[in-house]
Length: 487
Image 1 (cartoon, rainbow, N blue to C red):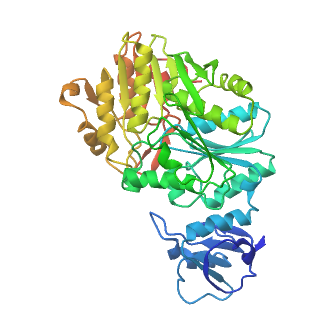
Image 2: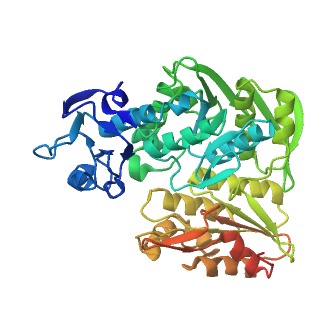
Image 3: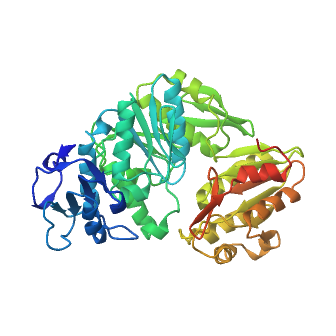
């Protein structure tokens, strides 16, 4: 519980109507969850405007309202705080209310289109093996040491973030590794947090349904690095052409990593096969259990981050070499019939292309590649034909199917995907709307030595159709189709 005036410090307040001495016992974004003595933040979102629910929040016991405009005559006993942007102010208020937990540990933000989850997870497990109690905020789940907290967004809202960080700090966490999505940056969910470092993985086509253009997507990502303090570090993938833009005007100490460029941290792929990666990192050779050149970048980013955090290079490589794949990221299964099936979260053109390239490197022309892929509904539509085109050109057989259609018609999504398949490749393409049947069909077509890629959903254990999530797990369906035990 804190006086309102105390948690408003640092906010650009336009006007306070009521008492600044009001004691605040909780913070809320959802008016339905408001508790007596709480502060309700009225935020203008993409789906609804929180200002419409101010009266409901007050009815439930809110004693203060953070808003951009008064809803009408002030209610007696309620303090109204007017600000220019509620979401920015909420980040600052949440950080102060929870005693600035990001100052009590080293918070590392990882942003980019692909590789965020793997890099953050590698770092979380690495620092656990190094003797720390680490924290993780990721697409798959949130973790406080060994405690697992389910994840609903890549980056939680400001209140949830500070609650998580406080839980970590109180549990003795020294580090937190956090995925930072472009939505979170644009919606100011990370406002008020102190980052000890930022990592940029890459930037490719994604989320243009939200950002409108690639240039805007880039500008949003860059904002994260613009706000790093001068005592933080910025680590960027020099092989990505957007890296120089990310750190332009960034006040943090700058470092680079790369597989092909002259960078501060270098890596060379010596061998890449289904058993893993043989890498040369900073002059040291090591064998890793992760597969694919793209994982060379993820491993190098994790290695460089750990070194910048003061860890011993040899010890870091030793522990990284023991780590297995992250859930839904190039997870593979060998069937009794000697078919290798791979489940991967690849849901962008670049990620899909990299996974397909990796499989071809392993195949070396000795087997066929059957790809099962779809595209999510109510998301960036421009990437649908692009992904299908890539998959058709790089697969011997392509099966287009549903991903998470959400509130769109699956056949409509598949129709848009088909537009990207060149005529000469259409004879090797099938469209099977039912995802389970599509996977089963791929398994039935495969012969010994073939690879099956099931892309798009990765770690997800559900399929979302018309707002309803039903259990669905790609790997379980594969095991069932191959006649393998799912236990």
